[in-house]
Image (cartoon, rainbow, N blue to C red):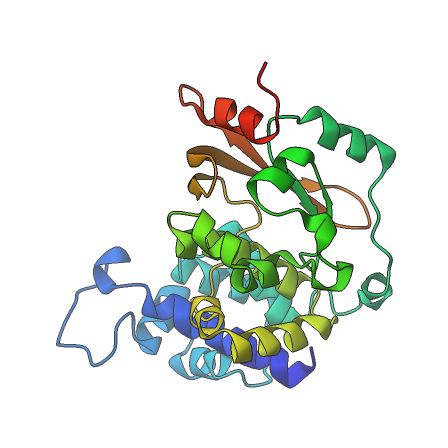
Amino acid sequence: MDRNTRLKEMSAFLKMKRSKLHPHMVGLPSGTRRRTPGLRREEVAQLAGVSTTWYTWLEQGRDIKVSSSVLDAVSNALRLNIDERKYLAALAMEEGAQSDWLIAQETSISPSLKKILQELRYCPTIISDRRCFIVGWNQAAANVFLDFETIGERRRNLIYLLFARKELRSLAVNWEHFVKGFLAIFRTYYGQYVADNWYLQFIEKMAKKYPEFHDLWNQSEVSSAPEVLIEFRHAKAGKMLFNLTSLEVKGNNDLRCSIYTPVEDTDTEIKLKKLMGHNE
């Protein structure tokens, strides 16, 4: 991601976050009728304790000097969570711009991690890398989602598959909500590895091919590890309820485990065992 692109992304992110805030949410009077949703730029500047001109330049993506303390003030004004703050800092202050050595590094999973996958017998689990390529999965995941072994490694990207494969589109009852969670994780990586031009190329290709991706991506949600309740309507098993827990694996590869735990007091685990041919 070059400097201009990075600043353009920061501009879009700030505008989106500002549009989602309303005066009553931050203790300001609503005042006269507004032409556009959200706070005005001068209101954000007031809350952050900076000049309107400076904040306007920041939101326009101009190449200006930004300190961490002032960026914190803007983050407070926009009510950003910790993941969103990290994302904004990465774009505004070029954090991670020197991570070129990571870009071409081969991704692999350790024997111990493979063992963990096997032990999570009735919890569909997917391991993905910093670009959201699927590098590991267990039998339960293959039965609930897809047999990833039949998909070439270069196309085994979780974000791509969520849009490209009809099985995954029809699996989640609320497909849009399901996808937004993974896009939020993907945006976290995007901000963290600003030196890796692969992200920008991938995003442009996806937006061109899938209009839904363009719309959902522009909502600018950021989250490193969302925990959500997911309802699936599996073609063979019917209704299945899972709690999704996303865990980061510390190390150079930045791997992530997405673990789907059958909700207690439901028949989800029983259905999963039948899918896997385990009727004990």
